Image 1 (cartoon, rainbow, N blue to C red):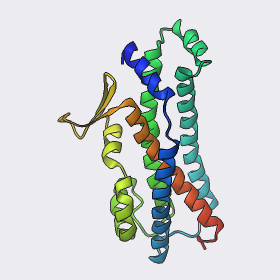
Image 2 (cartoon, rainbow, N blue to C red):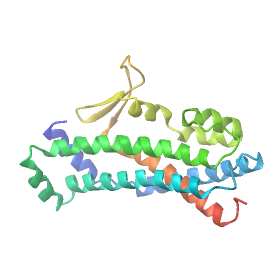
Image 3 (cartoon, rainbow, N blue to C red):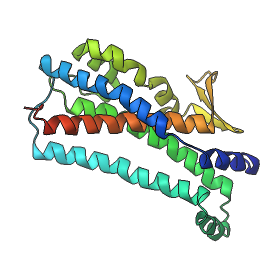
Image 4 (cartoon, rainbow, N blue to C red):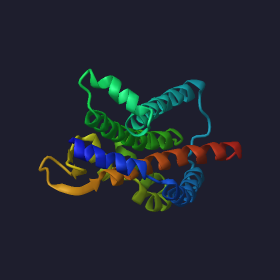
Amino acid sequence: MNENDTNSFMTVLNREALGLAEKKLWSEIEPILIELLEELKKKEKLKIVYSKSELDHLRNLLINVTQLSQNYNLLLHAITDREGKEFLDATAKFGFQESNWVNMYIHTIALFCILHIELFKIFLLFHCQDVDYKVANFCKTIKEAAPASWEKLRPYVDNKFRNALAHGTWNIEGKDIVLFEDANLIPFERLTLDKFMIRAKEQNVIFQCLINVIIKMKHSNFFT
């Protein structure tokens, strides 16, 4: 990414407004997740009792995404906020240019997205019982455990996007993020930087919605 691309990227960031889109996605996915948990419970696939050790491990997993979120926000502010200009100026003497920080930000978005997708799967499987707990088999597992709800959830599980990021089959070409399906390196999608950010944000919304739904249902004694 060169300096011209950096300037374009910052313009996108400054006018980014995802509030309405996030609310719309939340309103779509929330009833599906509630229905999924209800189907799991009906089929006796919902885990009711957890040990303190299990909950501690889950809590520590969530710390990973919290820390990454903090790094994500730090990089975002460093390249968009007025105060961030001081940070950019201070690091310039070490050879860092604005384009370096933007590239780091994009790479952080990729990891941010992968972590949210995988933690969504882990968080859901954690609350299941008598299932295959291998995260790699998530789609097959949920399809077998809750087939009716899975058909509604499936379109929101963006595995193709996740695989491109996790397998390293993506790159930055000019102002676009190019995604490849495999080592043939034939692009299956090109995303502008703002679209890439939105796509990653969607995974964050879906994951946060799942946490919110489970917490609310626990408070309503659903997990008893």
